[in-house]
Image 1 (cartoon, rainbow, N blue to C red):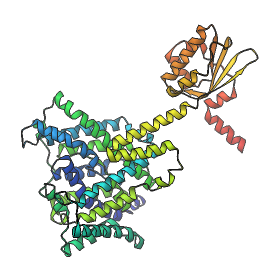
Image 2 (image 1 turned 180 degrees about the vertical axis):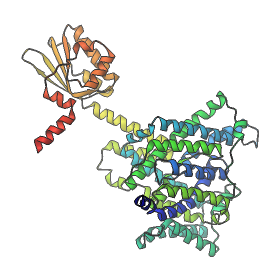
Image 3 (image 1 turned 90 degrees about the vertical axis):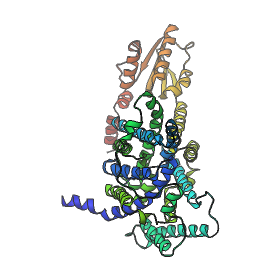
Image 4 (image 1 turned 135 degrees about the vertical axis):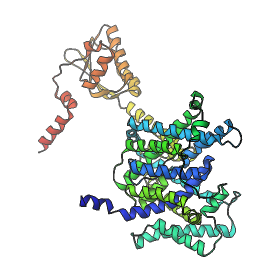
Length: 537
């Protein structure tokens, strides 16, 4: 028990300090995404608190930070606008449609967890992962450029610009240099505190968290505890028309949320050399969004930027996420005046360092060392992440990778032909037989000129799908129509089961009793491995 407690508390200081850093960085992010979605800043802050707390406690990846995100906010814009148009002016009906959508979104995500769909994240190829982190780094960088504009949307110039650049550079300099002096202090938190002190005591006229909220139309950071939204049930009619309206939005939001969360989980797994639970994360994200929707939050998912800040600052356990979420609520309830004084430049500097740490700079070095198809996938995913959103980018990357894989495997089908002494012609098939290789497979046979007896040997091939079954069925029919005998040999047990289920005809042409050591080794690879090891010894 003592050893267990020691291991759990060994990283407690780092978790608490990294949680404080994340909480400070969460404020402008949550507020900005709320403005993007067209809702009050507190709706974004409440989402960051509730989703961050629930996923930190119940999620499948300790150290990962969740909250309101830009990827979801851009989808919510039209949802809120269309919802508002359904009600009278000032009724703010779009907000309640948003809450209902977030609840449905959470239900879909929990269903994905129940069905264990999280495991499919393993199908995402490495070039897609690299494209994802590169594209997301660019998106984070571009989102921070908006902080270099004034309330009227004009770019800073003159002294305001130079002061902003100097403070951002100072923040980045502290974060870069401090770890070289000591690793006991969280560089991001120290940088924020130092730059905030310079601005406050130097009485510098720069953008702060408070001015950022007011310039966006908000009234401030101050708020109370999240309240249960009973108006959802009175203002949003629960009928087929509502489901038809919010259903597509909920599906898109659920997909984007899960993809971004599971991709972030994968990335943190690599950084920490540990393994998270994807299905557990799906359940936690879904439950968090249901609670958030019921208590007035805009919904959310994993935040790669904040998660990387947490990991880089030493956060490793669930404590860091819980500290960040609880502190965010404390900021809203008691410390809004102080948090509003933090200069935006300090937070921009932190995010720029996140960008530098997120971008896979090694991708430039390996471009000429990997297959050209992987280069296309990497660049495409990066570009689509910037132009559209993460979900479209990842789906497109997986589809391109799958098509390339299918095309390459389709070219690997081979047939070695030989004649036996009794006049039987043998076709030895090599390579996978599936929808992509069917045409090449059919071209190997010469039904018209073949002898009366033909054998097709599948010891080095596997039947993968319905297209392959149909191709073999048609081949058998062609030989029988020509008055010739065809036999299928060396089919694995799973291939025979597929063929027997599809048609009883195959029981007449498949040879079951085979005395061939190659076949038995192919059927029992463990025996082959054991025999090989014994031979080696």
